[in-house]
Amino acid sequence: MSHRIIQIHVRRGVGDLHQKLKRITPVVDKWPIGPDGLSYALLVRTQDVQVVTDRLHSLFMEKHIVRIVIQPVEAVLPKPVTLVAAVASPEDAGVKSPRTFSGISRDELYADVSRGAEISTSFLLLVVFSTIVAGIGLIENNIAVVIGAMVIAPLLGPNLALGLATALGDLDLMVNAVKTMLVGFLVALVLSCGLGLVWGHFWPLDLYSPELLSRTEVGFDSIALALVSGAAAVLSLASGISSVLVGVMVAVALLPPGATMGIMLGAGRYDLALGAGLLLAVNIVCVNLSAKLVFLFKGVQPRTWMEKQKAMRGMILYMIFWAISLGVLAYVIILRMGQGL
Image 1: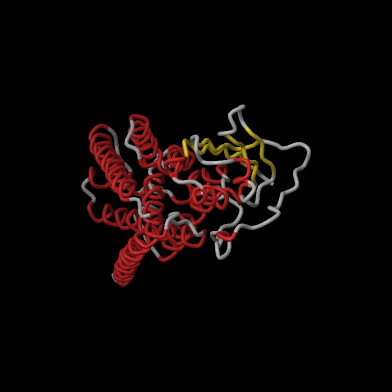
Image 2: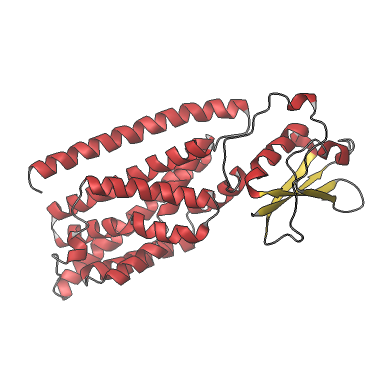
């Protein structure tokens, strides 16, 4: 069982912090930090972090909270036993815990995911390096190299950030995620297009490499794989199982279809580029749709009522948009299958 330490630091004038914290449950243990009585550390189970942090925000006004810090805990000795508050306060009546299961809190999830929506030097360099590696692997039909490119490609981050931004109604994160996604795919497309153009000019370019051709064929199995892989990516991240995420990134494979599309465009094979572009579109749509469904299932939502209403409206529009997009793509796949493409 994993635990977190929640440190709360408040300003003077909030009353007896120790007595107020007695109303917080479930808490494994708590202790003061410093002699002034304005800082406390709470030891809680990971799955209870969201409940406790939301309760802290309801107990104290925003202007009275200096900072709330959440830290992971490697181990707790001796084995802790969860404490239960002796008396529930009147305002606790009717308060419902969010629908969550073992996993990290909304704030931790936001901190992890929002980093993937930032256009940084590292992000751009990873896109460049992964595109070059993927392009060489696809042209040389080297699956190990292609998998390596999938692992280092950062393009999954902005897609997950977009899903979380909609779940929380965070417009700033949404704009950053879309901007980062567009920049990332544009860099990958331009670079792979140049790679196909240059490679075909100086060396023989095998456009019938199995690794290349496999990224130009789209079927309903591609939709199923992208939906399941996208859901697994979000679930692994939200559950704090970061080691699983690398394998999921390989399965989702957002970069290879984009690199294949660019290579085919550079080589002048627009028919094959269209197939790769369709596969890329299917992956993007399915990742975003399944991400939203998992966030909805996990109960990831804003804290206040007003923010929840705004996020709910955004979620409905978001779901409709991606569902219609998936329907259109499925129809295009049916048409291509009917034409034998």
